Length: 95
Image (cartoon, rainbow, N blue to C red; front, top):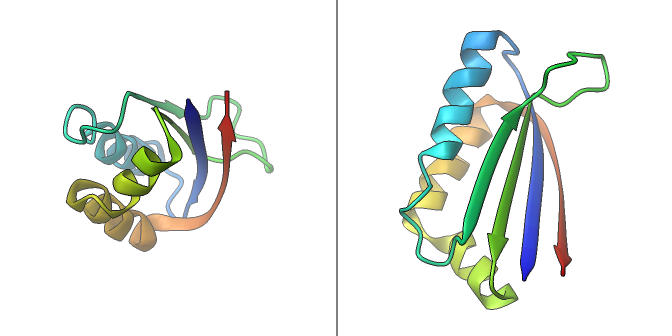
């Protein structure tokens, strides 16, 4: 199993903007065959070091993660995120 985690800090950190972007991420669920699990969480502490949204996705293999990266549904999400994010960090690990 491969777990892919991305943290996003948004340009507009208002609750409405964070919720709208979290909804964009959640909208991938059930639309990408290789995506076995999707979880989206929004920050509750709102500290200076906090990121606004956490995306956790799980795949059976690295090949499935690569297929997800180029999938048209994910590409539209990337397009949206490139417009609204201030920064992002990620980690991918095998379990």
